[in-house]
Length: 468
Image 1 (cartoon, rainbow, N blue to C red):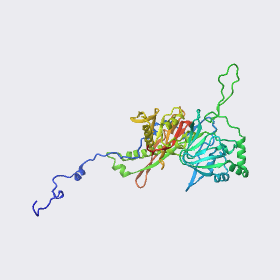
Image 2 (image 1 turned 60 degrees about the horizontal axis):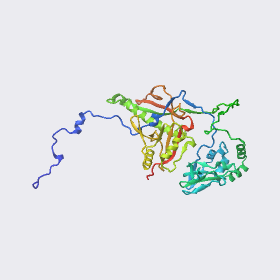
Image 3 (image 1 turned 90 degrees about the vertical axis):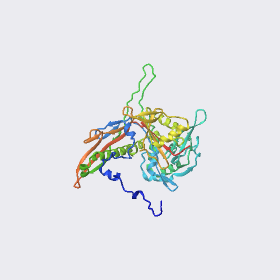
Image 4 (image 1 turned 90 degrees about the horizontal axis):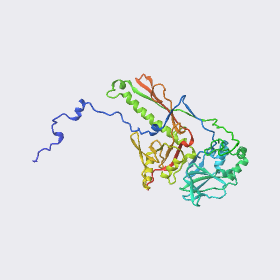
């Protein structure tokens, strides 16, 4: 290049053909339908049997059962100080149906906070039991003696559990098991001596305890139900027992819940911009998807009918080692007959897969609607991202039997409502405003019912962040 010759750049070169930016003004683009990241697989909605509900309410009639103290105790933490909420002491069988808040508050103040390191012994077999333990935080195991003299795990306790409640009213009670801390534990203890001192000053508590001691224990079967007297194996003209099946006098009723929104579309958009896709249809499609996502979330988490909140205490299990192991899944299956499915967060499924890999196990998979779903003991494990994961990276795994004929878990809806586009989902025209905006009311009605307690079980506090 000679001196003084200018360097010509690409921008200085004269354009010799039509550019793409200008050409696009005359072209018809190929476009997708509106996309949405929120859409999930929604396996619960797909696998749950849906039962038609007339009148918006479903009543679950059961045999009479006698159950007390089958809940969890809730605590309040202030710094390193833990206190039990006074009303939560009513979860203890001894204090069930006792409503004197002043006395409950005094009992809550008498609770003594104690800390145990991992491996520490909370109670020892054979010792005198003179206090009730409330487990505020941590995990502990009940240890008993096996048939050959070795230790055996009778059960696992976690946040909100209690044990030793009989010691509050029976001075002759001894510990029938040893309780050992698996992790660091924070517990509150309420001594029987403090309960007796308060009862001496409180007429209401004294009357409550006297009534409790005087009522004979109810005869029940292994499930807490009023028994049906039968005779078997007799010979001759034995006198047969008379019996009847008693029903609950106040059965639970499930009212259909609702998820709703008002979809608004401007008439100018609906009139002029409907090619090649109908704007109203696309707006409605995405709105319905969002409603279904919320519907599944409510079926899992709703405080009234959500599965996580309607599982009985004796159907809630704790993992023996934190991570979801095959042993824990077997224990979950053993609590019910005819389990149809597991529901777990994808991270919990991954954690279970790691544990299987560590043991050299390869779970089978089955085809469900064109999807390969992992199984355990032949029961499919469906992913569900609506099951919450806590800040401590713990979650829950749900196992259930489904179907009305199997006395399982069922979904509730009411098909045939006005302006229905899907069963129990309607879109109603609400009119056009003075701003030329069209409004549609989009509603879906639903609920879920657990017909008998053992239809639903949960493996709680499953660790998903541990790699080993």
